[in-house]
Length: 496
Image (cartoon, rainbow, N blue to C red; front, side, top):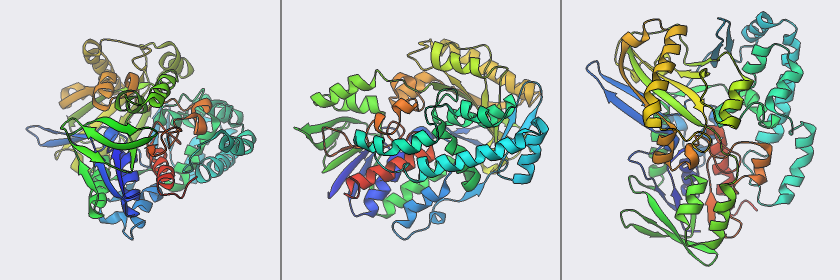
């Protein structure tokens, strides 16, 4: 393989492009939007006070060694382009009754925080940690960056999956070890960060706890957008080409081979292989219209379960808030019932749980002097379950979310707001071609993981590949970077 095209400059697409270019493959990265990043897009909002920088997400950076490896492939250091700083606590969790819990890998403080909730759960947490270490070893270290191309690969993984009771949910496994309900929520909410329902997502995803505990939670100085910019800079340093603002409109095929890509501007590129970091439904249904096998695959994928969408409120405010950490989780009055509303019944509930991102807690450059940058994120049903008029609903939900942050954290918040805007499920659909406005692609159920997920290489078209949230191993920065490693191995001939 001498020339390849990667569609979509999200973190997964960038990671794959860097791997290919590092191996000497002439790689062109084609992005529809005016900036790279995909879901890690960003906005700069000028005001009289100055410029506020808002990352779209993802904003929780874990597994920094997987990112650093992308530079080491060519003898470089990630520090040339990106400054990563540790964040502590990882998250501050709080509940409506005023109870708080700082979650970190500081054993003494974490043990004390657990004991405050329930002294008996200190020993239970240690047993959960041992379990998490096991699934991390089997699910992440051994399988996280290895492609599953046939059912036998799933069969070979089955003993480990059975050993760690992968058929159980993360929540049920956590509940096996700890009794306090708040602690159960604290140890199971992580699956929401990759689009999974803690009540249904495979217990294998408990590996996230070990991933964070060992590797920490990190922040890219200047925002996640600076991680993206650093990846672009490194890719171009190696000789790669980035083409922005020119959406791919077709992946051309001849028989069972891809021959090239075409874009909206009329640009055509003949290549030896194509890898898509675009939404998997969009890729198969819209970009491969002339391929009969791809249309069959598209019809199969649309019948799968997709992760929910998100509603985000970005806001810049007057003042600094040193008591509000970088990452907060504001749990609502319900946990399981709220998850059922979002994932199953498609109800936009009166109550909600929020992830609050406060990057200026770690990096003053994200806001003008004397100001702070925030976003509040609420998981909501995707458009297939809740086909609402979001143009009408967005201002209402925005006000409700800001009122909740005001009630629980910043009493005069609305008077302090300098600039604000929201991002709804329809924006995920329109900006990212995300099927049903899903924020994380396929829901990470056991029956939609590994071989059951979109394959890293198409079954019928031998030089068509996939990378990113919709393929193995799934969403999140470690997930899409792992998918890039698995896909690159296939494309470079190191995989099966």
